[in-house]
Length: 253
Image 1 (cartoon, helix red, strand yellow):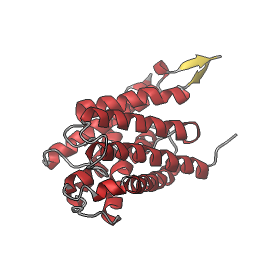
Image 2 (cartoon, one colour):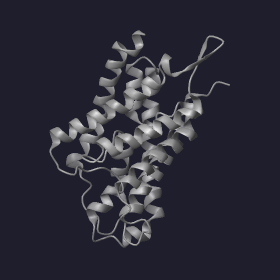
Image 3 (cartoon, helix red, strand yellow):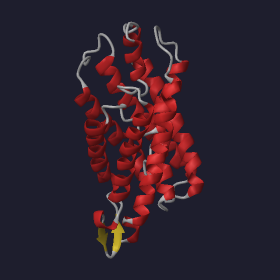
């Protein structure tokens, strides 16, 4: 049965909501005062984000393709793998899902946010990314490269060499595709995430940043708007570059 564009967007919303709820949730668990996981560290955060993406893919994958990320939607459209007419509706659904997921994280950890008023930077980090060292050209480059790797690998997973053929008809990875994507997210976080927090996704960064700005969080700092354009724009540029490399490599095979 053909899934309507509206229902695809509903699943993009739900998948992105789950991604941010579990991804920002692990940041809150490891950061906020009186959390039983406080101080668990970067490895737990990268594992948690990988599993958060996996959860979102399992929800949305069979129905929308589980982009869960405006950069992925843009990259796939530029690579000729996704219809341009669906890009804007997908992006709107993803951004709304990211906002809703962040609001749920705040509601879930409200008592712990109240107990962490002495750490406004840490509270902001539960919603969005900020660089370890603010050097905007390098920060942009970091997000650009990380997103390039993410989107290029997603495209590679769908290439002929990575799909089986049944009766001569290519068969994709289906739900099993969530596992290699999860591994990619974990690898990126461990290897390339420590400089900026590896946003790689405007719906994971810009929407939760807006939630941080709006929510009545005691002791919060400003929402880092002077930096916010980097995790919004650099992933889109990285995805565009990934599409260009895909078109001159895998698309020619």
